[in-house]
Image 1 (cartoon, helix red, strand yellow):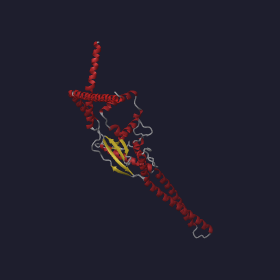
Image 2 (cartoon, helix red, strand yellow):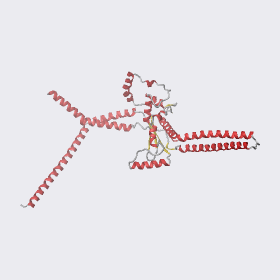
Image 3 (cartoon, helix red, strand yellow):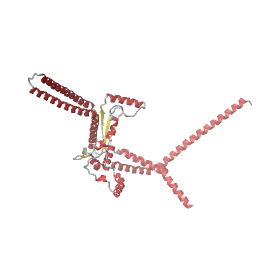
Image 4 (tube, one colour):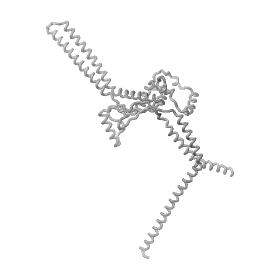
Length: 393
């Protein structure tokens, strides 16, 4: 037998071996698939055998879900959308910022002289001074007959689920045992200090921060103010108030320097006016006293007084023009906001979503019952069996 025949036989043996291995692997995979199908079918049969128990659990979950859904107070949400006016520099800055964001350069802040750009509006709305400024805003419930301050409504009329009182009872009891907080006895008429809030004031601020929010669309710069309250009229009223306060804050910031320049220009104009009137009166008195004199000293004095009056008038005229320019600058720096979506009283509550809560509790009951039937109950029975075996031994 030559070497070529030996090589051919070796190749045939290797081919048969590989073919046999592949056949064994395929048969093994088929067996695994069949075992998985059998396992899943067995689990499904176990669940089907206990369908009444699973149905009972789902009914209990539905009942619990209904109790939870109807225990959560209704919340009404009001959205207001504003489109701020952007200057050429801001538009260019926004486009450059978007291009830089596309290539992964730079952050979200825009360049320019305006430190409070639209991206910082959410921080302004959520800041402590801004929210404290809303404490005394009068609000009126839809079914109420008088307006009350927002702080009083948050502290006294805002409802919470029944289980929150149960959960907070141990902490209240512990506080009573350890002694009351001095902040509770604070004077309600005392002016709020934003630098050092009392405990009740901090709780009101925290509640407002969770119910009042602002967001900015980075592409269109549209500002969305969202207010969620348990009364629809208060929700709409507070949303409109927040929008007005935000506009006033931004307007005050952007026109701050221009208004200071206007005040200074008006002060200079008033001084120039007084000097002009004084020089004019001095010149007129001199003419009355020296009417008809033609001596050179009198003529020189008259020319000097006339020049002083003319100079004072020119200065007065210039300062008056500066005042008009400063007024125009204030108007130019005053931002204009277009209200895209105004505040309206919501009709339907935004929370709680009762169908979603009901479906969620039913699903959790189904998963819990299935886990108990498939894994929990067999594990407990196995532990009991081992315990009995240990006792017998």
